[in-house]
Length: 318
Length: 124
Image: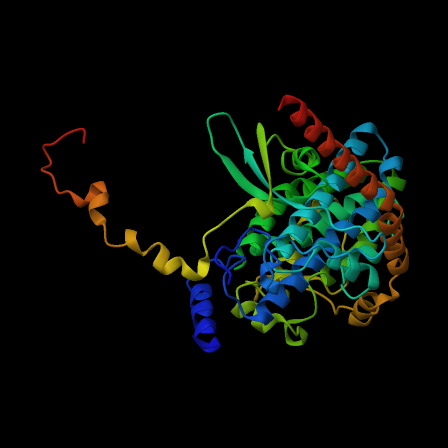
């Protein structure tokens, strides 16, 4: 059968909402697009543990510490679900890690911003995880089976992340003047990077068209961003805080919030490696990987020893 | 000739045209091969089947079970875990699915709805 026929059958399946599974024929570009997107997503989960991890030892109470540990542990799990999904497409885990460390693979730029106060933990849960959920919910219906299954698992766990973040801010917003100021400051710093998480405007988004055709993406960057702005613009009122955008205004005609211009220069700067924490984040990951060599070796040696023990036992039994 | 090919879930080596053992790419920092891949099956409660939930790498089966507990049952999703090294799973070939499952297509009489019975017949 000609490749053309395979492509037709493949696209027909996609159009009929039949999921593509690992062993099915798929265009090489589809496979590559998925590997890039899923591995980037996995890297984001793993690097995303770092800004929050540094607050585990400084959480203001045992309760908040437990919550934060649980959340960071979830991110590790999400990274694993996604790495496994990417592996079904023919890339090994080590290759992906190598691509992250060499800078070939990207991760979400949001994690290149520093977390300087406790309120940042709340803002990350509410805004960053909120934006992530907005992106991720439609991915639960992505055309590639293992990806969609991983995303269903991720989304189930993610909603607690957003809720705990908002609740942490809510508590602070009812506190002292300093605590209130801390919340406003965190919102001011995280707002714009959060809405940049939806990626470039549709007109400038290079991968969007084929991803929509292949039902990897179901909504455009701008659509999702607008939904997010509409949602947060209302929620921020409950905190008694404001968003740092003088142009943010309800538009009676469109029934959406209008908002100001996004600073894309900053976005591309951070993507290309010049954000406040790019180097620090990657160095931390590389160090963890390199210093973990002995753990991996010890585990392998221990597994080997355990195997020998079983062999000996079976030998005696026989 | 490749009479018997292994098709398993995280099957990346056969895509590269090999068969048999998984392709262990060397990791550059330690030179050690990747830990083998395990498929994880979880029984969510007594009385239900174990169901495939995903996969993970582990040094051996015991580590796979422990890590599966940490990754897949953090919210009481399971009461029992099976792990199987991915290379031991054999599967039907999706390229042959049409002919492979074809024999069932024309046997409607295997379904209860095939039989037209008078309305008076109860409990059947």
